Structure formats: C-alpha cells, structure tokens
Image 1 (cartoon, rainbow, N blue to C red):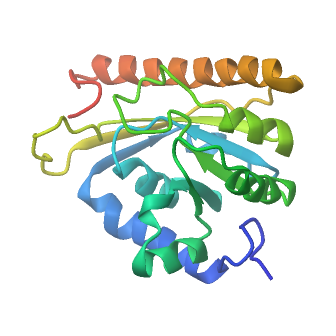
Image 2 (image 1 turned 135 degrees about the vertical axis):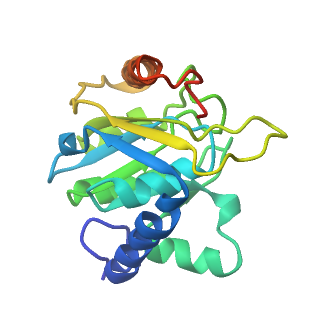
Length: 222
C-alpha cells in the first residue's frame, strides 16, 4: 500500500526522513529566504512548476515546500542505492528527451489521490529563465485536474568552471496558485504549456526585480 499522497511503493516515514535531510542538512549550506510559502494550498491536487538552473533546486524544494511532493527526477540518478532510495522517497524517474507515459501516469495517480507533484518543465538545467517548456506539466494539470503553483528560485546558478561560493544567498518565491482550463488535444496542450511558461517566467522576473532592489546585482548567483 502506498503512503497517502505519494506514488505506489513509497514510504511515508522515509519521505519525511528525506525531507528532514533536505531541510536540516542541505539547506544550511545556503542562506535561503522563502517568499510566499503560505500560498501553497493545504490540500487537493497540486502541480508545482519550478525553474531549473542547478541540482540544488530539487533538493531545497523537496524539504522546504509545505506539502509532501513527488518530484519527477531524471532517470540517470536512479542508480545503485539511490535507485532504491529515491522511489521510497516518492520520487518518479523520467527519461529526458523520450516519449514515456509511465512516469506521467504515475504522477497523475498521485494527483487523483489529492497529492502534490513537482516538475521542472524546462527539462534540463540552464539559466532558469523559463524560456522553453516541455508539455509534461500541462498534461499533468489537465489529466489530474490540478491547481498550479509556480515556484521561482534564484541564487543557485553556478557558471561552468566557477567554484561554488560559501553559503550563497538563495531566494525561493512561491507564486499565486491558479487553476487553468487546458483544452483538449495537442492544441490545448500547447496553449496550456505556454500559459504555464508565462506564469513561471513572470514569477522569475518578479524575483529578479526583488533581488536587484535589495542589492543582489547578479539575479542568478549571489
């Protein structure tokens, strides 16, 4: 039997343990400020859409979001002990660049059970500006009749060849939840994808502006 709000085979206690590691071990390596954490709906199906510029965002969000969340994670990380541990945490492996409905349907089941799913719709790490989105997030929102919560993170980006700064300042901003009506078929999915992309891009821009106003000149890395 699966833990409530998590995929089949996940362990509630191990999920809680993993979130504790993220919150109390990973987070202290950064100076993190969470903005708008109270905007997260306390119940009901939710899809968190987040920008992605480093491997740090998934770890931080896993522990800092107030909901149990099943994240879609690239399949390459599911190897060895981690390959056993991640599914127990409720994480869902996904093949990048391949058409694979299995992880999406696993995530839909979580949403149908009233749970929360986290996805990085850019598909890969980059500058985190939400300029390009894959269609998986819109599919989940439509199939799971879910509320969308955009989440923007800045301060985690590390240029190639650069060293990670000591306890860099990281800001996480949770946007206003909204429930978009995503139309049928491919056209509806594409239009819904663009709507989600704009919502996250606008939030990233708002966080960039906030950081600039408070003297953080580089919007991606402090």
